[in-house]
Amino acid sequence: MKAIAAKEAKNNFGEMLDTVQREPLTIEKHGRAVAVVMSAREYQQMKLERLQAKLAVGEGQLNRGEGVDGEAVFAELLSEA
Image (cartoon, rainbow, N blue to C red):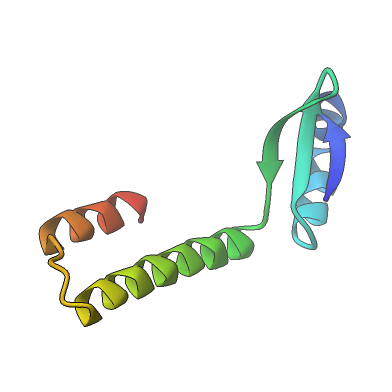
């Protein structure tokens, strides 16, 4: 993952937006990573993958006959949407 200084990100914001369409970008301040910027499409894909993983865990629990608090799971999923 490419990294740039916060000042460079500020001074070249448009270029940074173009870059994150191709790959995530780490923003550094005083040589320390403080943020990661990614495309909206990549972010949505990441959220979908997390949701699929949680659903797979729940499905496994149901298949094993383990009780699942459906309301709690639903509330958690809504909080991440």
